[in-house]
Length: 268
Image (cartoon, rainbow, N blue to C red; front, side, top):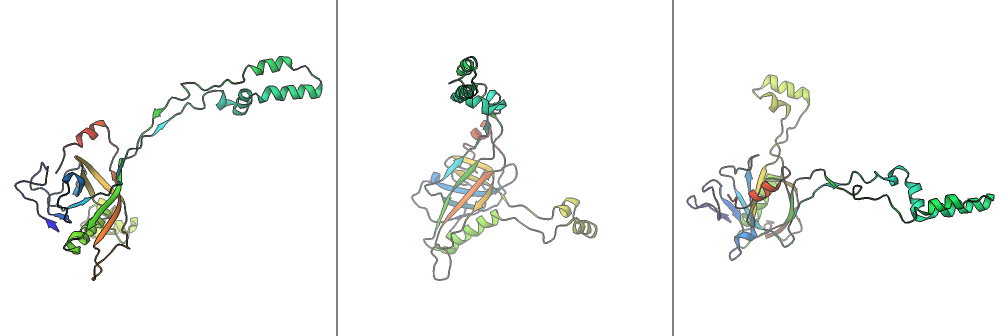
C-alpha cells in the first residue's frame, strides 16, 4: 500500500514537511507509530534525498543495537610473567623449590638455601593494577540487527513486493561497470566526456539510508546484510504475501556521545 505524505503536515513527528516521497507500507492500523521503522535514502551528511520513497515496516521482537567498544590491556606482559613466564609460573606454583630439592637429594647437595629463597615466591604474582589497565583503542560503527515484517492484507504487490524491491535496490550497488582496468579507464577518458574520476571509478556504491525507530534517527547508514526467505508464503501468482527479512544496518562512521544525543528528535 502506498501512503502519500501530506505536504502540509509531513510524516508523523517530522520536521521537514514535503521533503520525502510516498510511503511503501503494509496496513498496520492500531499499531503505535513508534513500533514502525521508517527507512529512506539520505546523502552523506544524513540529509533526506528530496522525493525519495519511504519504506515503513515494524521490526520483530528480536531487534538489537550493538555498540562494540575496543578496550585493550597493552601492559599485560609488563611483569615477570612476560619476561620469564615459565620461571614465574614455577615459582608461584611451588614447583621450583620441589625441583631444586629433588635435584639436591639426587646429587647429594644441601639445597636448603636456594629452597628457602624460592619458597618465598610461592603464592605471589607479578600481576598489578598497572598490568591490567585498559586503554581505548577505537570502535567500529554502530550496528542494528533485526527482522523487518512485511505482510499483505489487500495487495501483495503494493504491501510486500514493492517494499522488498525497494530494500534490495538500496542494498545493491547502483551500478557496476562491466570493465574496470586502467587501460579501459584511460580509453574512456580520452574518447568520452567522462571526468577522470568517473573513468577511474566507473561503478556506483549502494545507497546511504536513514532509520527512524522509537524516537531516534540513525543516519547515514548502510545495509550490510539482508536476507530473503524464499520459502515464505506466496499467492496464486507467486507474489510474496508475507516476509520476515533479516537485516543488518551499520552506521557509516563510529559515533560519539554528541552524535547519540543528536539522534533524538531528528525525524524527517
